[in-house]
Image 1 (cartoon, helix red, strand yellow):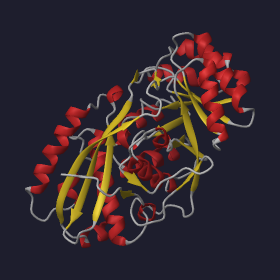
Image 2 (cartoon, rainbow, N blue to C red):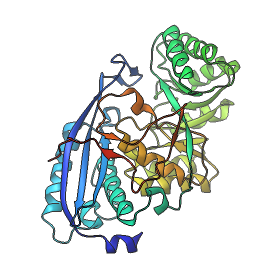
Image 3 (cartoon, one colour):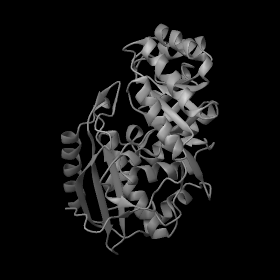
Image 4 (tube, rainbow, N blue to C red):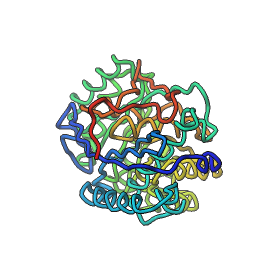
Length: 368
């Protein structure tokens, strides 16, 4: 990859736009918030030969990444890039382990650089990481917080579309209500579908164990982020007092944080996201770190444009172990995407095989 980078032409231009993607269901919510749309930043880099690379980052308010700050940082970075002669990856991203930029912004530029590099090489991005060919992943669809009956209805509709894995959002406003949500969804999708639950930090350790025991008969595979983000002892306590797989999500927001969780024996699994870890290299490093300790790892929710989900899929193809389900389908509930080239068929999505990320801007999309 370094040799390819050396042969690449200097960057000629860097262009951005903001993207607003309304949700099909404007009432969609989870324990940490609710909004009727997903917003993000699209960047396009172009080299002197006219080849381009795309990157995308969504605003993540519950992790402290707000649109106005992200956009200001991106604009400042672009100004610095354009002022440098002979622009290359160091100018675009800084040193490989640079931590000065917010993680979603690092991921934005990293994604675009990898897309451009793979396009110049004429190969799909996963090939640059030694990934597997012909990968197709079952999509884990997320069920927003609603009444048990409404969540069951949404799940039933998704089941009819071919999905067979569902993540149930819970919020601990009432433990009994959360149990009813799980029971209703299980009843709607039958006994063969895979179920996970995601508390988004809303439970205490003891409450999480009580809840896990209460849903034992519903065959739920994963309990995602049951306790607050930095409560490693709480995560560990839940892990050793339930039979469920306890997975970190918000807590897995850096390589350092993941290493600390592994050293503390706090989790059974880790949800990996580009926006939290700052790019493809860091995500794959995190995956290998988990693999070295025998900890499961999978691609978590990448809510936003198909650009970001395509990048996550290419990373999935290169993971040390290929998990059967990934949360790379939430773009299906968003409107007005700016790219095409990634679709879900019968509940599964294939890793693109076209050069780069394998997605293309819709004609007429304006970047400045």
